Image 1 (cartoon, rainbow, N blue to C red):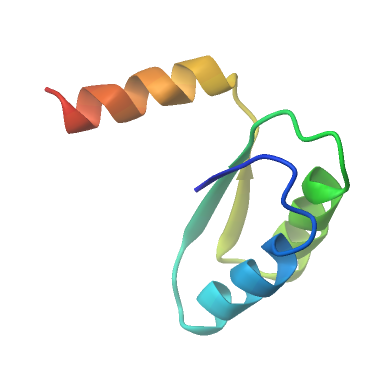
Image 2 (cartoon, rainbow, N blue to C red):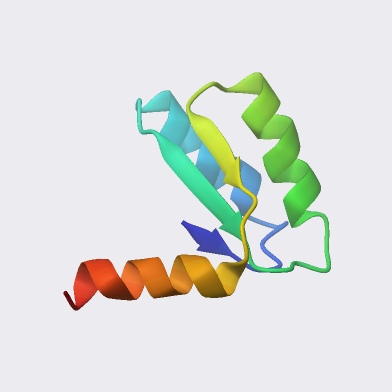
Length: 69
């Protein structure tokens, strides 16, 4: 999942998905609000939430490769 400036909804969304047993990889797309901090906190509290700390451009390329082989 990719998020940018989602502080108003990201915690509720991630908690809901985590409670349903999903493994969640979250890429923060250079948010300027509290989004990254919320994700960091949740990733420490929930073992199925993972903050991916990579360059978004590289992640985007990998997604494109998966969609358009």
